[in-house]
Amino acid sequence: MKEDPIIKVEHLTTGYGQTMVMEDISFSVNRGEIFGILGGSGCGKSTVLKNMIGLSPPFSGRVWIEDADIVMANGKDKINIWNHIGVMYQQSALFGSMSLLENVRLPLEEFTDLPLPIINEIAYMKLKMVGLFPFADLLPSELSGGMKKRAAIARAMAMDPKILFLDEPSAGLDPITSVELDHLILRLSRTLGVTFVIVTHELPSVFTMADRVIVLDKTKKGIIAEGNPNDLKNKSKDRFVRQFFNRIPEESYTR
Image (tube, rainbow, N blue to C red; front, side, top):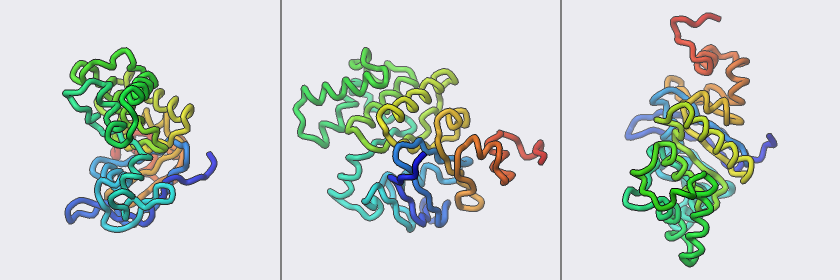
């Protein structure tokens, strides 16, 4: 894939409270690619994601979304950046008292001056794109786990973002529903040209979708691998990286 960075993370040091989990990491995400952020439990994947979308500040460093630094942005400048990105949270974060249609149209009601008939038309279109058009009037409690994930993606796409950030999209899904979601993400990426940044620990999804990944390590507090996941699985010179991608426990690992 042609190198055309749409996101640049520069010298990011981050953590929570007084605890540092990542120190001085830098990476970029190319326009139109599906980019994965991987690593073991507690390594800081979700913390880095929160820094990238401007929900929490890092200890130091910068995150460029195209030409805007979301770390330094405030007020209208940050809202302008947010209008160009979409986020799907791990638990879907749908409003339980709202129908799917109402959930999807909420960003349009909040951030545009479009009339309601146009907003509804856009929301219906987004639901159709994820295969949920017939369920527009249902409440989240009436949906399966996979349908909630699709609905959350539809809402994240409401403002036609250039970048979609997904936090553990396959978490809690059965294998068939998970692979169906993987293929939906692939289709949206290839047909719409949207850039995806995905935090996940689901290796089958990574091998299905990701063009490129980084692997975070909490012991080294940094990035220990970057590249195509299949290449890292088969060709990495790093023992831990080969273990990680081949799912080999330490006690049975041989060179």
